[in-house]
Image 1 (tube, helix red, strand yellow):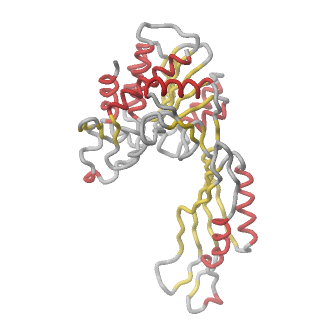
Image 2 (cartoon, helix red, strand yellow):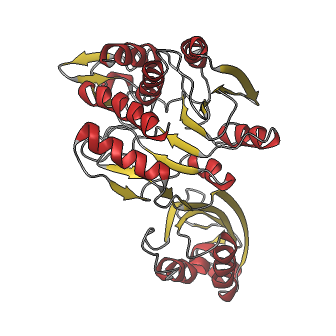
Image 3 (cartoon, one colour):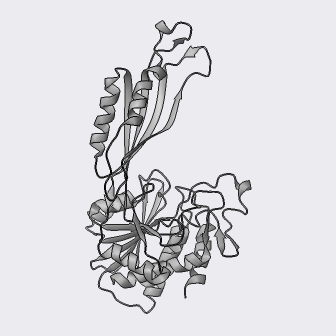
Amino acid sequence: MTASRTLDLARQLISIPSVTPDDLGCQKIIAERLQPLGFRIENLRFGEVDNLWARRGSDDPLFVFAGHTDVVPTGPVEQWRSDPFQPTIDGDILTGRGAADMKSSIAAMICACEEFFADGKDISGSVGFLITSDGEGPATDGTVKVVEYLEQKNEKIKWCLVGEPSSTNTLGDVIKNGRRGSISGDLTVHGVQGHIAYPHLAKNPIHLFAGALQELCNEHWDNGNDFFPPTSFQISNIHAGTGASNVIPGELHVQFNLRFSTEITDAQIRQRVHDILDKHGFDYSLDWSLSGQPFLTPDGELVEAAKAAIKTVCDIDTELSTAGGTSDGRFIAPTGAQVVELGPVNESIHKINENINILELERLTKVYLQILKQLF
């Protein structure tokens, strides 16, 4: 039905080296495919980020396909089996940067819509595309800004399908119906630099922080719930020292992150971290960065449509999950939208030789098409 068209479009998009935040024409290709179907195109640029908002119809309910055209850097090109931006097929495997995350998903979305609207049919509702080139970047000028724009225009998304690679072993075995929140801290412990032979004339920030570090790592933040695992605290970077072996450092720099459930708020996390640090009595400064709040889409029309489509096309019962990192769904869910993430197997994402099985690419197109049929 759509295998060759989806594959051709996926290869066309993968061949564009759109390393974040550059789009380099991907969204132009998308717009050119959607416009003949009756989609109204709006190009929205915020900062250095290109965004595309396309909508067919003006009535509610509004269903939206969401995704990103930017990709992560390739890493060492010489370690790839082929040029990462020259999509290569070997047997059933399509290899190239963005093959799994997430240009193939975008191609499948477009080809599903081309099939769904092939006869120019009218539906009771609207279909939209929210595409950004800030999905792999800091996520400050992408989906979050488009959502603000839509809110100002009172365009309300009811259902949103994000094409992130959600599957674990085979297409459709896992869909994400929520995500944990993410908050990061950038901590500086202030000591006094000095000669290592005269510790009484210095303050070693590593020693000052040692007890607090142990306490933060051992802290039981919450128990999680039926949908989310317990909140996790992790140190990502820690650095101190001048490089000399006889100098007590003057500062210690620590970066940490908490992926948190709906059982705790970001305000409670901040307070508990400060309480632990303050208890140990050293001088410090701490800057916080909240990447997103946790969200959950319970069983409803969108979840049921996705489960039914996967059962019809893939003949498997899908698992609902909130595991993994963050996605742009965190910006869409707070508007009241039902949000799920459904896309290819994620084993190769961000890796050397990122790839997707061509047979699963065909099935993904059929799953997206079936979801449209279920909802409309």
